[in-house]
Image (cartoon, rainbow, N blue to C red):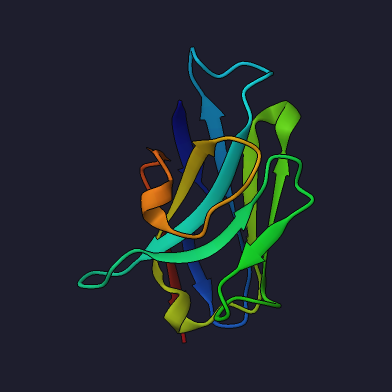
Length: 126
């Protein structure tokens, strides 16, 4: 499974960005279920959990720091997961990574995922 993240860029504080993560690969068929997550990392710090969503999209989880501002969603027909980021703050500046793991549930710990995208940089100016 390959994951391609996109949508990062520069935003002003209070602004919005929408990240996308498209899954592909020879082993990825319509019957393969993937739990998906978003993590972020700044230099010198560990990768931290941002949001996660289960296969059906019915269950989601968020880090306290982004609750009420970020929304994770997915379009399984397009094998794509989205992260809508509103009311951005300078402390949201980081490289954002999408992650996937086979199965119906989601996970909030980075080590529980076995597929990772390349990361997309989000910079929020004050």
